[in-house]
Image (cartoon, rainbow, N blue to C red):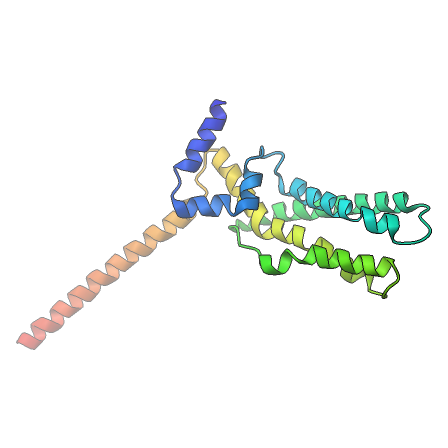
Length: 204
């Protein structure tokens, strides 16, 4: 309980900009309520794979007249989805740990409709209405989750881990801002000196 309160105090001590970077939007805020071991990017990726697998139940069950073996196919593809999304989340964690990249807002208007479009195309293909390349359907269904994890959640999870370890994840940004402010002050001082010299020269 004390650890949790310390965690909340650290979050509340941040300014609005840092807090927004750390917590993100509603989806990321939901994940920040989970323990860090549970909200690991690979687990979030695997959870997305599970959601896609659940959405595939109906197309696999009722797509063809011959329903024999549909559960086996669905179970195999479900495992492949979980492993693929889990692995991509793990890769994102490793990449972010090396690059130290900060969270970026994913293109929601593009990513959010993609799973539904991919599911619709897969359903159309499995019901033999039209022949649609399977790679296109699977790409549309799989891409949004790993993209969100890579762009938004994996960097945010790294920052949360730094805060839990007692480190300031925004220290580098604060140092850069201080250096920039110092440089600006020095430049203003030099400009003032130059103007003073010019004024003195004109007065003479």
